Length: 232
Image 1 (cartoon, helix red, strand yellow):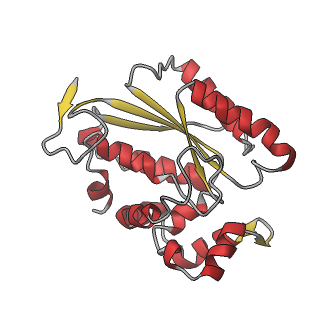
Image 2 (cartoon, rainbow, N blue to C red; image 1 turned 30 degrees about the vertical axis):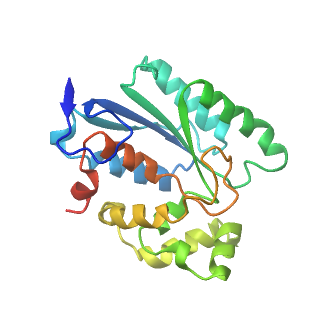
């Protein structure tokens, strides 16, 4: 079934919008899983016939992009998803982290190429997904240079805790992910300020950059007022 948008705003999609299902695979077994699960559950019921978001279950706690890719491919094949029809869009959300350095990139770069061959969009955050979460609370791009350099390096400050995770913990102050989603418009505005640091083709982005918000923009482009819905 096709849906008409009343007031198109320069979207790259056609005015006549078809129902779409978004399939999102990701690295983190906790933060990303919690975020995308809550985002999926927050899509208003009246739009379920127009938009679905499916967080792809991880088969293990492994974070390597090659493992994320394998889980996504298994999911797509199991559900007989054809990404060429336009009715489905698949995303692989990964971090720059250590995956693009040393011996790790020997698996990562072929994985990125395989995604392009299979019409899977790779959304890489530099340095990590936590940057997107932080954008819900502060204008990271507007911080002083010392802060931005620490964010880019994202060194461990304690066992299992990096600089960005520490900053997220400070500003989030125990707020639930559901409550955080009300700040999505702020996050999109703050994330947009990183645009231009690198071209979309740059993999991984060399400077601070979050691309997770592109998933929200796809929802908007398909006629779902998700930002307004989340802010309620």
